[in-house]
Amino acid sequence: MQKRCGAQTVLFANPVGIMAAASIVGPKEGEGPLGAKFDRVEKDPMLGVESWEKAESELVKAAAKAAAEKARVAMDDFDYIIAGDLMNQSTGSIFGLRETMRPYLGIFGACSAIGEGMSIGGMLIDGGFASKVLCLASSHFCSAEKQFRFPLEFGSQRPPTSSWTVTGAAGVVLGAAAGPSVMGCTTGKMIDMGVKDAHNMGAAMAGAAADTIAAHFEDASRTADYYDLIITGDLGYVGQELLLELMKKKGHDIAHKHRDCGIEIFDRNTQDTHSGGSGCACSGVVFAAFFLERMKSGEIGRILFVPTGALMSPVSVQQGESIPGIAHAVVIENVRTCGQ
Amino acid sequence: MNMSKKEYGEMVKKASPNSRLVSNCVKAFVVGGLICTFGQVLYAMFGALGAGREMSGTLVAVSLIFLAILATGIGKYDDLAKFAGAGAGVPITGFANAVAAPAIEFKKEGYVMGVGAKMFLIAGPVIVYGTLSSMVVGLIYYFVR
Image 1 (tube, rainbow over the protein chains, first blue to last red):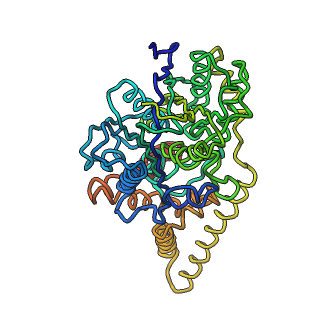
Image 2: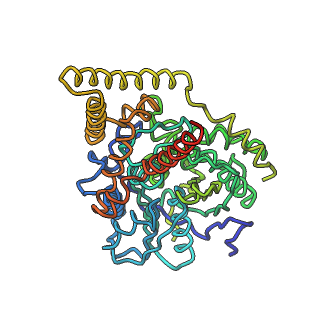
Image 3: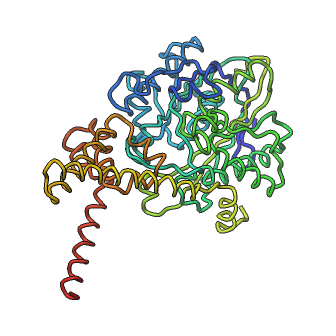
């Protein structure tokens, strides 16, 4: 069976089950509107270790363990662990997973990591190269501030277009299971809309999200009607407005179906998060704790999950480069029987 | 995508809310003014205690720097700066915060490559260009006088 479908999309021969997903978050996320839904809310943003980077690794470790336990899979049974974060050289993922002793694929897609991981994991399983894959994504507000912006205690103001990096980690176990399953994916192209403002990542990513969603519709001969919800990663309020406008220009009205994890995770009126949440953990934990649960309860049946990433580094921004965006779409549907 | 970067830039501008310029300026003016007034009060106090003009000035600077670093250390200065913006950034207290904050943040990387090397991450340019511009002004003054 031809699985490749159009320029960017693959549709799997068999559904790849989502055996379980786990979410661990920091205190601010716990105070947000989804607070009660996360598997664990850490009270101490430093998690009892001595640096932000180590704290992020602790989150990764905890999410991996929690996801494996929820899926009832022993760590040793994973054929691959795929993980991504925002730190230089994947510090968060590597030092959280170095003791797992499982085949490891480190990825970088900025905040689109969980979408990239689930795409690769799904293809590995549907290709017959693996039967169980653990996908992880993490970010930490403080380690991200330290790397990308200013030291935490430095006094500065954040513009209204800026987003708030989510502290947390998400783990998604792919394998054989009925219920919500990955049916395919559309891998995004890097789209550079010429945005240079690192405080407006929603604007930098909206073009990529629109491009990937439109490419998915084209490749799979679908429209927004096929899905109950189209869920982007961390476009925030600014990026959402731009995405809807760009999609309209492409002839697709997705306004009533669109949700954004960055908008869902914080209450912007009480939590001072400006344009919304961001970071690799943002789409990961909101998917795991909120949208996946809504699928399991049968409330929604089909989603297009589109984690988004702003592909920049502090160096590229300082050298005046514009920020390329990326978005990876993952098709998730409720299936009655176990496919694999 | 058949849309130029310029067209998209216009779209972005429309979708992006602006900072509240007027209220930010008022807050900066009031808080910055209060910090300076506080410095003036200290100056008068040190003067009354018998310190000369120059000594009082030095003591004011030292006191403000100490208080700013203390506030940075207990995690309060960034809250003040978030509210007051340039009002907390421009006075000498802002400079102290800019040195103390990276010193705290990068302590995990050790006292040499962390604290020592990164302490002037933000304040460094101020020192470099402050020195440079005072040299230029000094030269101009020398010839024009």
